[in-house]
Every structure is written in structure tokens, then in C-alpha cells.
Image (cartoon, rainbow, N blue to C red; front, side, top):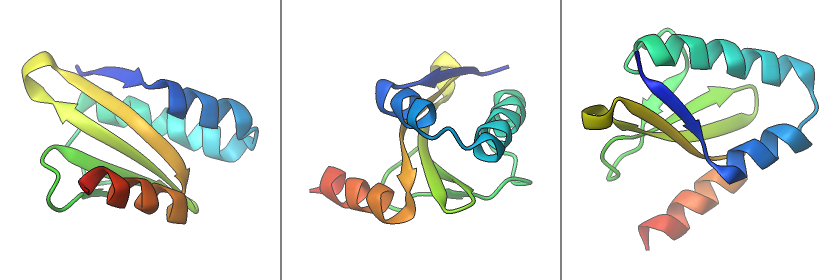
Length: 94
């Protein structure tokens, strides 16, 4: 079973985003991911050119996370609307 870490930005996003369906769906996704982070029943895609980085899509929001297999950790490091998340990724690649 993998340990889930929510970085400060993701915690802040969830706290600000008081829309209950997205929070409920995110919690369900975390349960599935902690058992098998490579499960593809969820809307998950690997981010090209960033090893071990994936995105989880829920509604119009994206959650970015990294799988650290040797420590059995899933680290969610960024969340937000689609445009914001992909801008963040573009800045990270530079």
C-alpha cells in the first residue's frame, strides 16, 4: 500500500475548492491509487518527458503527482484547473 502525500499547494486548492463532488471523487481516487498507483480505471496519464509524473483528471481539474516506488509514496504536488496545471508544467520543464 502506497502512502499519499498532499503538498501544501494541493491542500490549499482543496480547502479553497469547497465543491463537494470534486472532493468526494478525489478521496475515492486516493483510495484506489494507494492500493495500485498504476491502475488505469481512473483518468490518469503519464506526463511526457517527466519520468514518474502523472496527472489525474477529475471534471475540469487536474491533479499532478509523482510515484516514488522505492519509498512507496505518491506525492501530489500540484492541482488546479486544466490551463493552470499545464502552465505550471511548462514552467517546470524550462
